[in-house]
Amino acid sequence: MLISTSATVPASCRVLAAELPHHVGRRVTVQGWLHRRRVLKSVAFLILRDRSGLAQVVVAEPDALSAVGDHPEETVLQVTGTVTANAQAPGGAEVTSPEVVALSGPAVAPPFDLYRPTVPATLPTVLDHAPVALRHPRLRAPHAISAASVAGFRTALDALGFTEIHTPKVVASATESGANVFAIDWFGTRAYLAQSPQFFKQAMVGVFERVYEIGPVFRAEPHDTARHLAQYTSLDAELGFITDHREVMAVLREVLAGMTAAVADRAGEACALLDVTMPEVPRQIPEIHFAEAQELLAEHTGEDPRGEPDLAPAHERWLSEWALREHGSEFLFVTGYPMVKRPFYTHPEPGRPEHSNSFDLLFRGLELVTGGQRLHRYQDYLAALAARGESPEPYAGYLAAFRHGMPPHGGFAIGLERWTTRLTEADNIRRATLFPRDLHRLTP
Image (cartoon, rainbow, N blue to C red; front, side, top):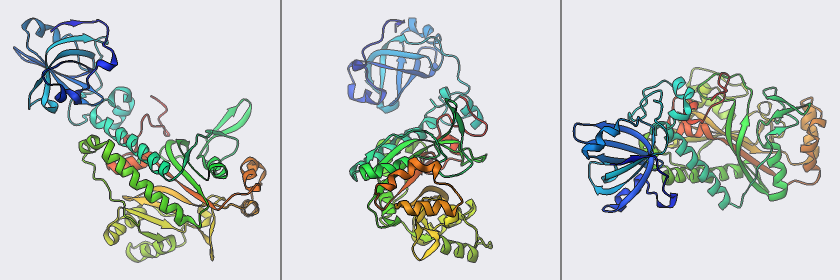
C-alpha cells in the first residue's frame, strides 16, 4: 500500500462503494471518508464511506500497516486497488492491494463514533454538531427519505399538469392576518417573512391554473414542542376550476401516493435502515366532518370538545386510531372546520356558513396537511375582511387578481418535516430537519 497526497482521479473514473461487486477482478478507484479502522497484527481493514454505502479495503502488506494509524476516522481518502470477491465484505466485494491517497488532513474526531450502528448521542449533541453528526447513516437516512418525498411530490403534480413556481419569502403584509410573523426591516420599510406562499400561488392560478411550490415558510409561534418549528419546508399546491374542496382532496390523495412510491423506489435503503413501515394510501381516504368528529370524541373519550374551534393533539391521535380501527387507514380527512379558525380567504360551507369548505389530513395521529376551497370573487373578499374588522388596503396587491376574474380554486400545504417525522416515527421533528430553527436554536 502506498500513502501519498497526489492529485485526485477524474470523477468519471471513480467507482462508488455500491458498484464494487460489478468490478470484481478489475483495478478501480474509490473515494470517501474513513468510516472505521480495524488494525490487527498482520492485516488492517479500512471501511470507506461514500454516498452509496460502505466499501472494505484490506491492507496486508507489512510495510504499509504502520501507515494505517496515521489517518483517524473521517479523513477523506482515495483508494486505488483490485476488487476481490468476499461474501463477508459489505456488498460482497472488497478492495485489495490498495494505494491510498489522503485528500484531506487528518480529521478531528467527531463528537461520537459515527461507525457505531446506533447513535450514541443525545438530540442536543446531534443538533449542535449537525455538519458532522449527519454523516452517521441513521441520521442521514431521514433526509434521504425527505428528498425522495419531494421528488415524488414533483412527479405527481407534473403528471397532473401543474407548473412549479418560486415566490418571494419577504412580503409586505402578514399572509394570514396573524400576529405570529417575523417582522424585518426592508430598507427602512416594515416587512415580514412569509408564513406561506398562499397569496402568490392563488394569483398564479390566474396564470397557469395549476401551480405548486416547495420552499421555506416562517412561523413566529412560541411553541417549544417536539412537533413545532419556526422555519419549515412547505409543499404547496393550488388548482383552479374546481367544484369544491373535495377535488383538492382528490389531488392530494394522488400526491401522497406519488410520494410514498418515490420513497419506496428512491430511498429503500434508508427505509430499511430505520425500519420504516410504508403506509398504504387508500383509493378513497376516509373523511369525517369536524362536527361529527367532535360528537365521536364526546361519546367515546370522556371529554366534550363540542364548541371548540379546533382539535387538540390528543383528539387528533384518537381520531387517527379510530380511522385505522374502523377503516384500516393511517390517513383521515377531517373536513368542515369552523370558519373562525380558518383564514379570511376560506370558502364557507354551503348551507352551514359557520363551517368551511376546508380540511386537515391526519396521518398517524398528527395534522399533516391543511387545505380547502378559497373565495374567488372580489366582493366576497371585501365582505370577509369587513366581517373580521380588517381593511382591504394592506391586501391591495393580493386582491388585485380577483378584480380581474379568478376561477373557483383551492389548494393545500404539506409540512415536509412533519411528513418525514411520522413516516420514520421519530420522537422529535428536529430529527427530520436539517439545521432546525426554533425558539432556542439559530445555529449551526
